[in-house]
Image 1 (tube, helix red, strand yellow):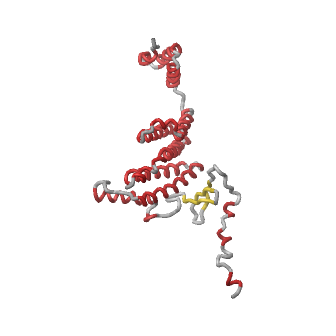
Image 2 (tube, rainbow, N blue to C red):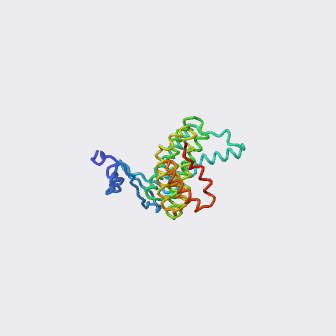
Image 3 (spheres, rainbow, N blue to C red):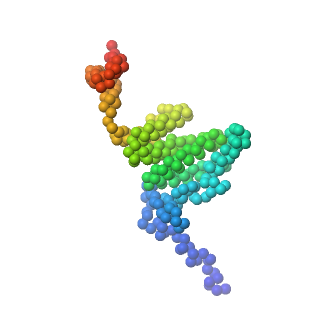
Length: 278
């Protein structure tokens, strides 16, 4: 038998699939989300995320791995279609359930979308982030309502504040970048209300103010407010509130008079707040 017959069949082919050239000059940086957009061999743009052992490549549209489960854009779309068909047949959503395997598959798919919207946020593709976070919130909703097992109903809920925060940051940024500061602020305030409702629902209202997601959104809200036109009445009201809380009643009285002069009829409504304790 010749030496050629003893050679592994893979010899000479491994180097063709080596990704070293793809990674050359693109070092992994721990603690950093390092992403880029590239043009795929199919002519469509792709998204790449650098990870410690290589690179993740994702489609920019549809399911990140490019698969079409059951002929749908995603498993979520498939199960939402099944839910719609069930409701049409029965006139109600009652009786529709997701088993443990189906819920696990939805969680695995949601992780793909998480990796993509995180990458898109770094690239400031806020429309893509809104699309993918909105979609992942629907996963939480369908599992929370229809999973057969209680653990499957609750396991993803812990991520609702984070996904909501990312959705809000992206949506508000779309408004902010176009100078629509009031609309941006409204989105953030609504998001904070939704996160607070989450903590109240699970009996942890006291955790709201300590939430990292809340701190991020409140910081963004302060940044947005600095872009808003100064409202002299609102500014005086804030000063008045601070003076009352600090029991600086003489200063508060002067501020009240200024407000009353700017807005007739205000004097009476504020005077009750300024009564000093005996």
